[in-house]
Length: 167
Ligand SMILES: [Zn+2]
Image (cartoon, rainbow, N blue to C red; front, side, top):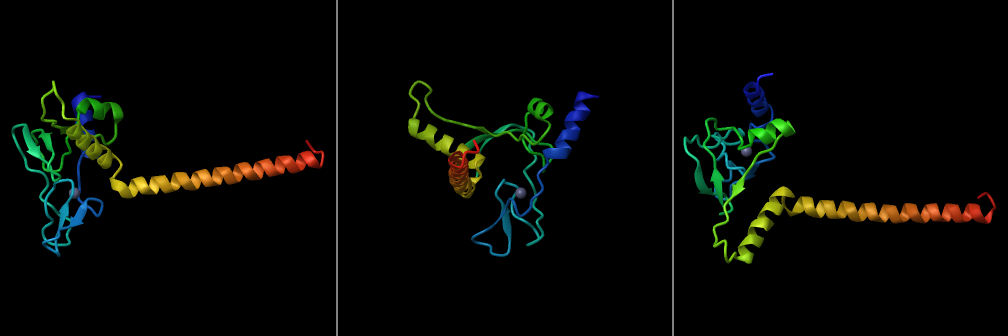
């Protein structure tokens, strides 16, 4: 297998972004059109799901994302290709888009508040906002309740069998 061909095939398979209900959000100012929250722009025509994609660039740039955080935007030769590390992609063999956040501060005296803002942002992104986190928390509570219930039932059955002399 050719390593370059393998990387290209993987990029086509799992590193290409197509806008859908997952990423499209209603723009507050333009009711009929939606905007990609990943940065692929506004759909045109309205309700088509088609967006222009990311800008093709020949240089690596430092840009601000939609939340105002600085990040490294690598040069791009295709408007739908996600940023990635080809080494990670070929090892993982699944989606592994990479975003390098820029923390602009004096390294001798780091601003802990800014570090917390960046880590909160990363955790929020990784956890897909608070809805997923609250859903996960509710699922854990439900699981805990069931575990307690199962433990209680198991204890009751064991205790009952002990009383009737079966154990
Ligand atoms: Zn999109």
